[in-house]
Structure formats: C-alpha cells, structure tokens
Image 1 (cartoon, rainbow, N blue to C red):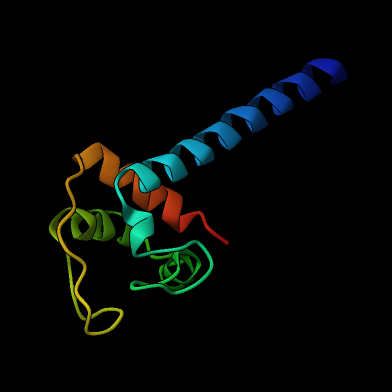
Image 2 (image 1 turned 90 degrees about the horizontal axis):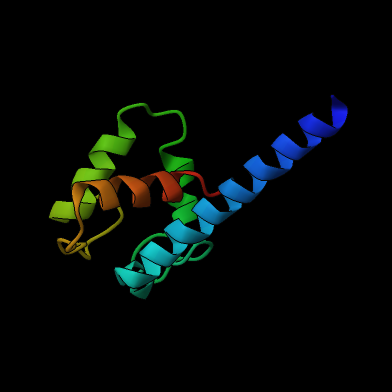
Length: 102
C-alpha cells in the first residue's frame, strides 16, 4: 500500500511540474516574458510580486485574466500593459501560473 501511495504522489508531482513548465512555456510563447520576469521587475512587475500582492484575493484570478486580455494601466505604475492576443482559457492558465509563483 505504501508503494502505491508513493507512486501516486510521484505521478502527481510529475503532472504538476509538467503543468508549471507548460504554463511558463505559454507565457514565453505569448511574449509575456518580454516585459515580465519571474523574480525581477522588467517593464512590468515580477510575477512573484504579482502573486504576493494578490495572495488570498479570491477575486484576483478573474480580474487579472481580464487585464491580461484587455490590458491595463495604473496598478503597477505609469507604463500600460497592452491587450494580449490570448484566449479566455489561456488568460486563466497564465494567471493561475503567475499567482502560483513564490
């Protein structure tokens, strides 16, 4: 039984690691990394800073996904984020990945 538990947990870890890499790949494919980095401010805020700012905010995922699609300004300074050519599903995946950064 212990071996089954270990195998299931290992499989879950592989799936989660694959998903995290896939979402980072999506961020790169959609050119998000041109203005953002995981751990430092570039043109836009670091993803770790975004995750910290919205930690525990249940409304944040939907609000941020809308900002990813439509663009936004003023939250992180004067430089606006342009609208992005992403689907609703891609925006949600990107935001979930950003909010998972520590």
